[in-house]
Structure formats: structure tokens, C-alpha cells
Amino acid sequence: MDIEKLVKKQRDYFNSGATRPVAFRLRALCALKEEMKRREGQIHAALKKDLNKSGFESYMTETGLTISELGYMEKHLKSYCRPRKSLTPLAHFHGKSFVMPEPYGVTLIMSPWNYPFMLCMEPLAGAIAAGNCCILKPSAYAPSVSAAIKELVEAVFPPEYVAVVEGGRAENAALLEQRFDYIFFTGGVKVGKLVMEKAARHLTPVTLELGGKSPCIVDETANLKIAAKRLAFGKFLNAGQTCVAPDYLLVQESVKERFLEIFEKVVREMYGEKPLENGDYPKVINEKHFDRISSLMEGAHIRMGGEKKRESLQIAPTVLDYVTPDTPVMQEEIFGPVLPVLTFQDIGEAEAFVKEREKPLACYIFTGRKEVERRLLTSLSFGGGCVNDTIIHLATSRMGFGGVGNSGMGSYHGKKSFETFSHEKSIVKKYNWIDLPIRYQPYSKGKEKLLRLFLK
Image 1 (tube, rainbow, N blue to C red):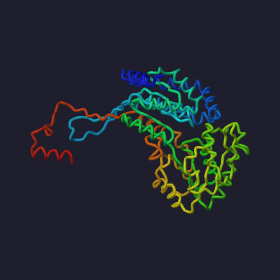
Image 2 (image 1 turned 180 degrees about the vertical axis):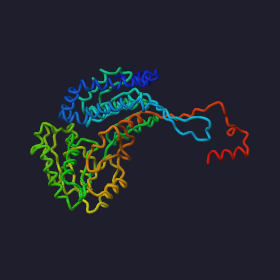
Image 3 (image 1 turned 90 degrees about the horizontal axis):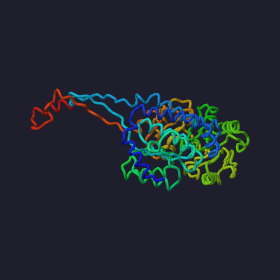
Image 4 (image 1 turned 60 degrees about the vertical axis):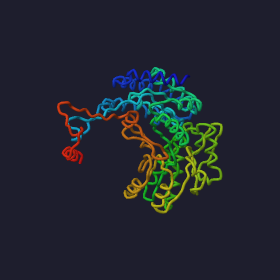
């Protein structure tokens, strides 16, 4: 595929004005949603092949969320597109002020392999809703889903409007050499920095959805049984390959043993005594990541789990005990079904531990004390999170989702997606029936007095 020609083709199409009418955008969103519903079985089969996801998990975390997002966009798009009135200062008398959203133009969406369908299509919903053309670059690590996305998109849209570029590093590099009007990237910090560096050459704005070591803090007043269930769900969903998965557990020393006993029981109830024989338990995406995760377990004190099956690329839900800040598993984002356990004596110690590290994409706080909740939510900086639950904060179109600092920049979902892929033009419309002479030369002390009155 000639990527340079494709970008030019999309730019010509965008410049024709075809994507700007709200009715056109609504038809596009509806067509994508309906075709997605028709192909749900095919998409789920691809997810099973790439990640061994069950149909239930595929719908819950991929297709269902995307269909919901498309429906939300359809419902609210007309209101998002309307110009917004703004108060006009006295110095601008007589006129009116308003803000108009406009599409950026030709956009690029680069998606990862862990939720290869949802993390490609949800940003696309925002790009379409805002009136852009778009090139999608799915991950080469999930080839079955990448092919399914390409077939889906080609069944709905002409390539001059929305196109899919498959491939690996060579295609990524070729795309990043082009001048786009907006780039939306989801992935790791290292590649995110490269994307930002390449975008800077064209002064292209970017959204970076990255990751980091997201903490889960459990204090002695938490409901330990519910905390254990919700932590196990969030940590081992998709075999831990979730950007907002709890990366490590900070549990108060006084309840550590009791909590871990409950947690281990909950994990066995969820996945069985032999998780690697559970047909609904996902796999690690490839051997490279299987080996990386395995190396993080070497020499560690495995309290639960630790079983591995190379032929199926599966690692059982694992708990590592007696972990210290210097342990290898604490030096990088795990992105796998391994939970390191650290302890704290008082909440100030846990607070300081998180503050000393890079700002995470998520933070989870389990407590029964409102003062602890307020303290941690106020003092800790992170992308988003939950109190007394894990990961569900991203499963809504009514709040934005994104990182801060090392975990990313920008946000999306629902209205935030529309805003991310739109530029807001500020407009003042002046009327001609009066033209105050104060701003024109020659200047005088009288004019200056009036100016100071207007601008004070």
C-alpha cells in the first residue's frame, strides 16, 4: 500500500467537505454500529484466536463497549456540533461571541494488541463524530483481529474516508513520516515518546494513552471479601493484559494475611483449582511477552500460582509475596497475571510510596474511611480510578478516560472523544450599526480613561 498516496487521497476527500455535515456523520456511525453487530461472531472468533478470550469477555470488554459508545455518540452528536454561545465583554460592544467545533482533518489512530478491537474502534467513533477522515493502524501482534477490523471497515467505508493499514514496524514508521492533522496513540511509553517526537516535526497534536504501575491500596477498614473479588477481577481480566489493571497491591500490614487468604480463595472460585485448564482463561499475546513476564517471577517468593504452559502461552494467576521496591517485578509495568504484594503500616506510608513514583494511569483505593478516601484522592495524581472497585471507571461514555504525566496525555470517551478530535474556533461577530472610536488613533487621555474603564 502506498501510504503517502492514501493520506493525500483522504486529504482531498476531507477538503471536499463531504465529512462535515452532521447527517453524514450520523449515517457513518450508524452504519459502523450495524455492521459491527452483524460481524460480532467473526470478531469474537478473532479475539479467541489471538488472546483466547471467551465470547462473554469479548462482548463485555470489546464489542459491547464499542457498540455502546457508538450509540452514545449517535444520541448526542447534534448537541455536540452546535456552536456554543459565550459572554461578550463590554469592550467588544456591540457583538456576540461563540465557539464552533470543527474537525482537524486527516487523523491517525494507532492501537495496541491487548484490547485490539475496542481500543481501535472507540477512538474511531470520536474521529467520525467530529467529522474527520481517519487511517487506522491495528497491532500486528493481534493479526486475526487486525484482519477482522480491516474487513469490517472496508465493508462500511471507502478508503478515502476511513482506511486500515495492516503490518508491523515498517508500516508504523511509514505512517509516522506523514503529516497528519491529529494522532491518537495507545500503547507503551517508549513508542509513545517516538510518536510524539515524529508528530512534533509537523506540529501535529497528539493524544497518548499509555500505562504505568497502577497501585491498589487496601486499608484495614476495607470490606476485605468484596475488595478481594474486585481486585481479582481487575487484575486477572484478559490475563492481566490491561493498561489500567492493578499492577501491585499495597495492603495494610494488620490485615495482610487475612486479605490474602480471602483473595486466594476468590481466585480459585473464579478460575478453578487448575486455571490453565479453564477454557475461558485468556493467554499471553506472544512468546516475547510470555518470557518477559516469566522472568519477572524468577527468584520471587510465589505464594499462589506460578504455573505456566508455554505451548498455550498461559500463566496462571500468581501472587508474589515479600516483595520490596527493589524487586525486578517492581521496576516495570507487569502487563500480565502476576500480583506483587507490598505492605504499609499507616496510610501516610502508602501515600508516600505512590507519590515517589511516576504518575500511574489508574489508582484503586479500598477503604471504609471517608477521610482516607478524601486524602488519597486529593494528594495522589493519576489518570483515573475507583474507590472500592477496579477498572470500571473506563467503561462509561459519560466520563473522560486518559493519563497524566508518564501515563499519557489527553482523554476520550463520549463527549471527550468528540472534543479530542475537534478544534474549537472562537468567533466574535461584530455589528455595523455602531463603531466605537476608542481603539483607533489618534490616542488621547480621554480615550485612555474610557479604555481603563472597559478593561478593569
